[in-house]
Length: 282
Image (cartoon, rainbow, N blue to C red; front, side, top):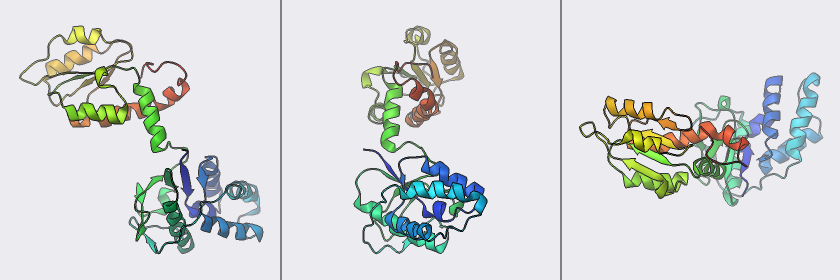
């Protein structure tokens, strides 16, 4: 199911100069972006009465951005008693604050993924989620720029990146919860994960042969907080051949986040090569 991005009404209603209008056009280029019904109705009234209040030289930009938003069906409003936004402080105008609260409430009656599209200048501190008081909604994820992947899109991209890759972990003791998280969150089959236990007082064996036997596209993870410099140095040396990616998290608890970051770094290349194999070098 395609995600929906609820646009902060301030991005449309407070767009009065070239910079803010350019921001509006950038947001409307994301086809998932819509207004809530309260903001949509208010914008219709302004637009139909010719009350846009922008310099004539910028009128074309304003008409393009607002016309695009109004051409998209708004998100329907759900009746609820929410009166304010939870922290952080919202710095948009009082009108856009009221419209935003009303339209966020509208998302509580819809299925599928929802995000709030906003700009950091509209908040006292950069938000990652927003909520209404009282809820619902209690936790709407924030996008601070358009065309960011939804959670489902990100999971799909992550699974595509790790498909068919072999993962070799060196360092610490085998932690089943980490292996399970790699399988559940990254889509890596447990059979593709090999963990060589190693501590600073117990050196890993056969590193060269094991790493040299990995197929192209494999990832070597050295848990550097658990091995000595001699082992981490050997892992780095043997992983330097083409087609092998080396990651060096400090602890095993960091492995999943580190691999997610690797997938995010490779996302543009993966999207270009999505129709090819998934073992392209990272």
